[in-house]
Image (cartoon, rainbow, N blue to C red):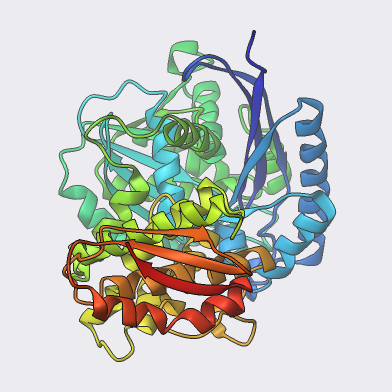
Length: 514
């Protein structure tokens, strides 16, 4: 019997545009791109004055997303993987905006950190490029610029700078309809230079062999160079030299906005932001001593696809996923007790799996993974202060820029770590701010499982081999412990959580050692 066709949609909402890619998956990791769509929405227009996405921009975004979601239905997509970047990430009204997308467009948009955005861009661009040796990747968006150093197999450096074509245009050239004065252009370049000093210094430490530019800014500048300087030479279509970029920048600045729109190779809709984009690229190339870049048509949404395929197939033998590597790296930076964390995670997952079998909860594999990572990180704040280690753990996780996770997942992991010690998660807690009802129920389940698992390794000696739930009589759940050692202290500690267990699951908990 032939397997049913599987279609997925990948959506990227940036500061300037929304992009959609629809993909049909065939056998193994083979796939076919069905459609690539892009609509300019200028989400960041006017935002950089007060960090609020303006009502008109929200209306544009919601309308486009409605249409894109309808398109995914036409193609019978089974899921939509959607991420939002700089403009949404920095918005003070982010929550209200995401709620409108969910309510009016039926779209659950996940916000990613700057470094996660950079990682996804690396995956997208590197997977479609011929790379040998350390390569610099430059992606200039509307609100941010991502800089990555990596080779064909992995990245070595990730950074996200608050330098975008829309952001800097709003700051420096928003009211200029005539030519851009050279002094103004130099001010933009100086701004970029000052904002990128740390990244530039780090990049200079690598022996960069090649460089790639991605996104609309780089593509448009390359096409202008091909038309004006290379006289339409097709062989020069995907390269851009620094000396030619400097010449293009002067030409762009010399023209008023109306004439700029008619420059061959330039998308007229980018005419008002292309000067700032050119300043960013010229400065980054100059400061990193890159004389030429190759232009890639691949981008973040391609990275979403590569990341999706990696998650579906799992890591190769002997490897770990980017998510687990990121979690372990954070734990080790905090000098956590890794053996204890692994025991707590193992016991919590055993209770999760056995609890699902008896319908204690109905959470799937995605939330199981969240429990796994939460249990590993639950104690990382102890190195600073044990008395408030749950609060410290929450803070470190929230601010760690964990790679492979969106902001919602990071919030869940952080909240799980906070509530593993005591309390029932509720709306009164600051640690649940911005988390929806489904997320709150997830935290309640995870926190009590981690709390019990923590008590079952109270001595940090790994005395409990297994911990599994089974149904008892009269609305009772039995937690069966497998241990060949004296573990009375662990059992006593776990019994302290029976009241919280009943409040969360509505069942009495009885703990028995086999």
